Image 1 (cartoon, rainbow, N blue to C red):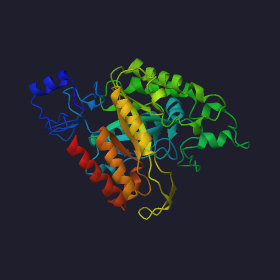
Image 2 (image 1 turned 90 degrees about the vertical axis):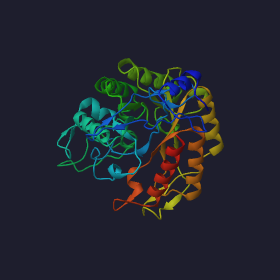
Image 3 (image 1 turned 60 degrees about the vertical axis):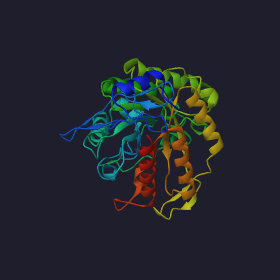
Image 4 (image 1 turned 90 degrees about the horizontal axis):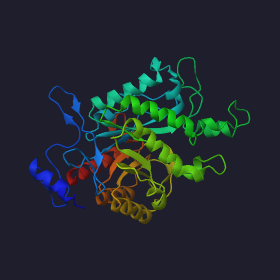
Length: 366
């Protein structure tokens, strides 16, 4: 897993030390903490060996959380969940509602409209030294709750309305997560807004797994629609890495654009009430062999890999050991799902201790 001759030569010129694993590690990679407390961000790129690097050829460790909650409910929040005090946090994956962004809906709990609210969230995370990965997620019609609006829509509100004969949005396809038109509008607007900000990147389609394709015969267009989303961002922001949900080798490798990062969601195998958070959850056993094969194929093709969602509710120790091993082998970044599960009364619980130990191990490797 060594960089090419160009990056090796560059590393010599700028005094980068090369550890045994061959990944360049200078004294400072990623966000630079300035004396005045602000941060300076390098625009990232994917090198020919499938690593996320800065312009100096230094591997940047994107290790962080899913946070914000801006795609559902009251439109999310920052500053109260604890991510600002995580010992290691260099990226926040921020899911958003495409329709709320295009219509610039009012967010009662924030006293502002949705576009400036997203901009404020981005600015807040950047002020903490975090890259921000804007994640295109929901598209339902219901507004954020707060004030006189009591109904708080969940993440799957679009699919619930589509299937509910009593809903005013019954069988309205434009509220679904597969709705391409509203997604392209939102991505175009956001890419134009943030094109000059090297800290902002895009995950152009949250999780286009089979379950979201409600309309018959639409799943066959997934790869084509994913290309359209990638190209829409690149039209206005040609330099930023674009994150793409990983489906499988054949479909992954059909995307030929440069600077792509493939996003894997890998949850623990647990069903019941978490002994850590006290909440109920149910997930299934990851196929570790399949996961490794896909990551290896992508890396061999010069694609970067990223674990955009991991953990959640209860991090079974054997699962935690396995996912750390995968991350070490393939030099992946990671974003924990979801940030509130790391804290109990704003103190790191066992989930949080696992996460921070894992990230410390990965930082030392990178």
